[in-house]
Image (tube, rainbow, N blue to C red; front, side, top):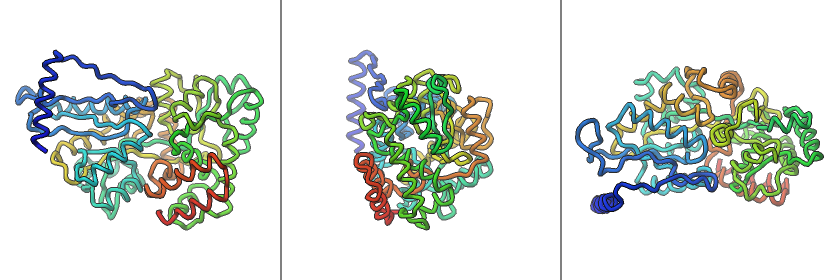
Length: 447
């Protein structure tokens, strides 16, 4: 392996000289992501032994994620730049994998982890995705010492620490909190038609009918990858069941054949009657774009959509677009948290811990989340740095009842989520309620 790396290094040096240092790399948001995630890395030929430069013998810090889209890429680059300001002697490789809203990256990660070739650190959702996929498989090092050393035990909510813990040990550092149950709406469209954003299912269908009569698509959906439909569905489940019974689905204390689950599926089916006809050819950014353009009035998406609205489309919070909790979920908070840990088998353990220390710091969380559209996982971040949405969400997070997201890997195992997404793809097309319920109940053995 070393000889191949040496040959690759020599070839890179020759190509660099031949090209006189020219660089053609650029980003291309042709679909839902960019190709290289704006990689921040230093080539090994540039490493030197002195003047604060990187030693050629030092392994690069490979940061693996799927953050290549609008807002998230900006946040990641800001975080890496902050780290490099504090640790200029450590070379960083932004190893983001584009496409599929994380699906592609997770496939690459699984292959590497199974092949005992882990990245230095990688993005993983807190909850089942972390604990059942990697901790239970004995692929992660505990980070209790880092949490104690950094004084983090009272800086993250205990519920959040529990999501990244297993068997009494902590295995990952949360960098952010996303709210999954957000309904975004075009303020200009709502004002033009004299409408108020809906907070109940009855209000949603009243508003949707009025918009349909006015020739406006009521609800934008981009489910080219089926997780987006699962995302919409889980907010309906939460709105009908409430947090306690919603959680009982994942512990199998509540059957998917329960009457309230049937009611939620019926409501979801009805909502699908108001979506854009080209939903299956669009991704979540495309659906958000419909709302931004006024071609659709509403969409349901996590608050990474806010980062897209603000950073890529230059829209104004509470000027061009507004937000409310999805119908029936006022006072509830569907949590998605991105975290990074320390895989077993990496050589540069100390460098990884230095990166995790920056990621978990007040400065790191504020550098990242302001751009990402999320809020900090820490309870002591600088609220003044956040816009109206950020402040509202920080306050809601502290007061609301929390629920873990199914669509984003926190509520249930990856195997079960895969089955749900497969069945969701069928349901959106065929809309057979009982068939869908039977299928996800039969798959519950994977929970």
